Length: 87
Image 1 (spheres, rainbow, N blue to C red):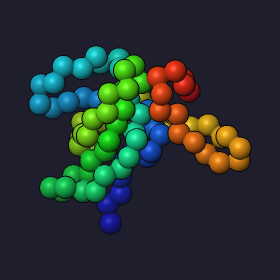
Image 2 (cartoon, rainbow, N blue to C red):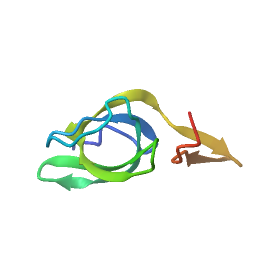
Image 3 (tube, rainbow, N blue to C red):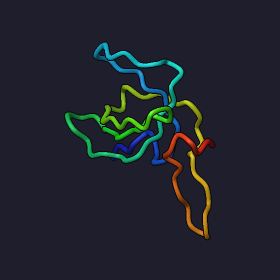
Image 4 (cartoon, helix red, strand yellow):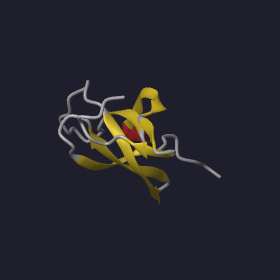
């Protein structure tokens, strides 16, 4: 069974296919893995710069840094989603 390529908390590059303008150096964080639709996985991603949240297809994402952007707080893993929290 196919699996999502990216994990929650992972830093990714967004490369839109439909002509949307996006800063090529902007980094996004995977906020949520969404179900497969039309044979392709989808994700909810959040900009590290302005906090804008988008729903994108897996084909529009590329690896930015293969490690998740996460930190351990009080014995549990938390995902850093705010622009002020750098990994």
